[in-house]
Image (cartoon, rainbow over all chains, first blue to last red; front, top):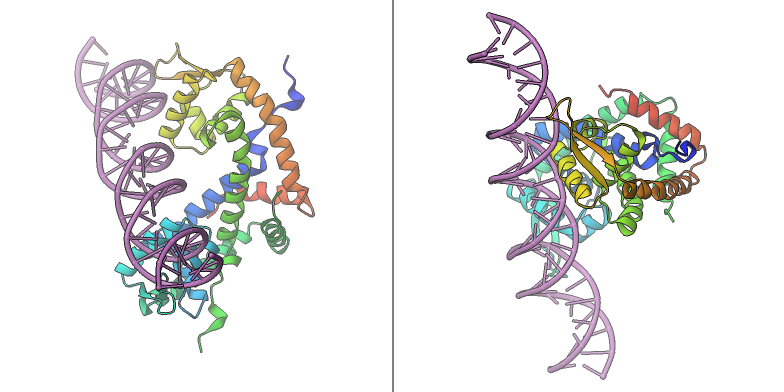
Length: 147
Length: 147
DNA sequence: TTGACTTCGTTGCATTTGCAACGATAATAA
DNA sequence: TTATTATCGTTGCAAATGCAACGAAGTCAA
């Protein structure tokens, strides 16, 4: 008979569990910005991040902060610009950079999404016994470097 | 001035946090099976799942249990079969099905990976104040349907 | 039995992805 | 200055992805 003591149970494996949960939540929440505004995940993150900053920021700034591929950001930004959700202008101090800025249209989107996002988040957190504690552990995991 | 009360902070948004953490852990752990056995994530999940079952199982069985696209499983299984990590045989009771079974080589891989995976998991859990509780919340979130 | 319908795994194909290379600009050093 | 090196954003391209369609096999009802 096999050595059952060293069996591997995928469903109990933390990285797998996290992946399952995250994918489900991600898919779930993405319905909100896909159906309402026809945005993909990268576009959503870019808009959300832009809304937090009051000066124009560069593409580099975005992909370094928001865990997206450089080319993904570049392409997403082009689409958003084409849809007049944000503007791309040349940075005059350093002409390699682009200045990205939400338009009124973009701001309207993030305004609406803010409420929806908060509602969704509350809904998820309501499933947990101690939401505060969960967030704390999550945050500590995120901020701790994993060796 | 803007209405800061309704600002949206991406870094504090639960789905975003989960995504960041999960991607990092996933990337991190994947080094183990990529570097050692040259497996991708789908291949890893398939092997892991197969190792838990003692009878041959079908492709459908796998993708319904392990949150992977049907075509992804089909292609991953072909690669694994080509590398003699598993065998594909026709199911005689229902000839639409294939019987998948780990070879000795496949079993050796999962045996080695089991230890590595457990070590990695412990490492991650060690970063958390109350690992048991965290798992419990995670499990409850996974098992709860999200409305 | 036949015919309609379902399910299985594979595959074709258009889209997406991520890496690397590129041109343009800037910073640094000689 | 000029030469070298680094950084920015874009783009080419090969590989990966996911959906839908397919043929093969099974089910069910008439």
